[in-house]
Structures are given as C-alpha cells and as structure tokens.
Image 1 (tube, rainbow, N blue to C red):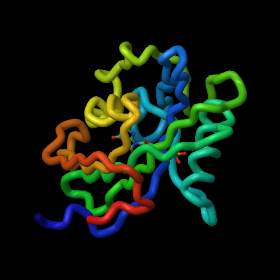
Image 2: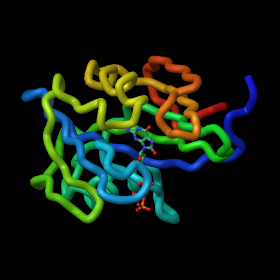
Image 3: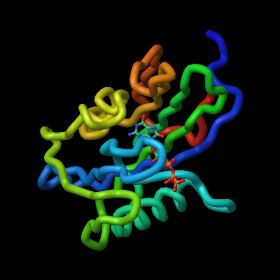
Image 4: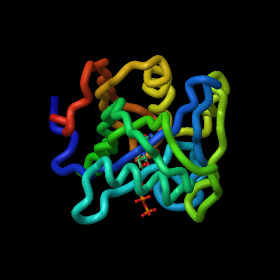
Amino acid sequence: MPQLYTSKKPLTLVFPIDWENKKILLGMKKRGFGVNKINGFGGKLEPGETVEQAAYRELLEESMVEAQNMIKVGLNMFTFEGDSVGLEVHVYLTTDYRGEPQETNEMRPEWYDFDKIPFEQMWTDDAYWLPKVLNHEKFVAQYHFAQDQTTILSETFNLVDTVPDDYEQ
Ligand SMILES: Nc1nc2c([nH]c(=O)n2[C@H]2C[C@H](O)[C@@H](COP(=O)(O)OP(=O)(O)OP(=O)(O)O)O2)c(=O)[nH]1
C-alpha cells in the first residue's frame, strides 16, 4: 500500500458521556476546520502539552465542561487526497465532569440520546466508529478521504484492547 501521509498532526477529540441516561454531549462547530458539523470537542496541541492535557483544555475551552476523568477509546488517522499531512485524532470519553455545558465562540453544545445521534450532520467516518465506542469498544482506524472531505476512498478499522499512543503507518 502506498504511503498515505509523510507527516502527521496530533489532534484531540473528547465526548462527555452519561451512561445512565444513554446521552452524549456533542456540539455544533461554529468556526474553523469542520465548521457547521456536529462533533465532539477538541483541537490541536499547544507547545509543551501532552495529548491528554490538550484534550482536557479543548473540552473546557469549547464547552465549559471540566473533565474529572479521561478514558482513551480510539485513534483515528485521517488523510485527504492530495494532502501529505495526516490528522492523528486521539479520541477520549469522559464520564465524570463538572459544570453545565455552555455555548462558546467555537461550539454550541447539546446532549443527544445514543439512538438520535445526528450522523448526517457529522464527519462521514463517525457513523463507523462512534457506535463502537458507545458499545464500550476501543479501536484504531484509518480513513482516506477524497478532496471533497466527505467521500471515503479507503479505510481500515480494528478493535483493540489498549489504544496505542501513536498511529503506525
Ligand atoms: N468526529 C470527527 N472529528 C474529526 C474528524 N476530523 C477531524 O479533524 N476531527 C476533529 C479533530 C479535532 O477535534 C477537530 C479539528 O481541530 P481544529 O482544527 O478545530 O483545532 P482547534 O480547535 O485547535 O482549531 P482552531 O479553530 O482553534 O484553530 O476536528 C473526523 O473525521 N471526525
């Protein structure tokens, strides 16, 4: 298989989960990459930050929710036709958190029932892996997109016991 990327950029993605009421906190992204899509909360690492520190900070900045725990559930490598930079997205759940979700400059948060997740308003790949996460499974996956950032040209998906720290091409 040809190399899909020559360098990669780590990103975080966090989903607050209420297992008891079967609800997930998602937000409408108001600006930047993936604008107008519904997604979890996350973004780039700041200099000197670990992935987990960035995940905690981005959730707080985007939703005002403060995670008390952070459970790593997945690793996604996203690549795009014609772009040599891969997006390595580290996916976490938090099940213990403080604060009421609030709209911020970046996101409009809202709780969704597990069976009413608006996949048609989310990134195309989410319909493949998010249900696994809600089924208590962990995964490593790779999705290669066409330039339209919607069509998936190839994918690999594996369930794992422990999510690795890095995606290995
Ligand atoms: N669910 C899902 N999330 C994705 C996909 N691709 C992708 O980059 N993301 C996430 C990872 C990050 O949480 C977010 C992109 O981060 P960002 O560019 O908005 O980062 P940021 O908040 O630091 O950016 P900025 O606007 O402040 O510059 O989107 C995808 O296919 N599915």
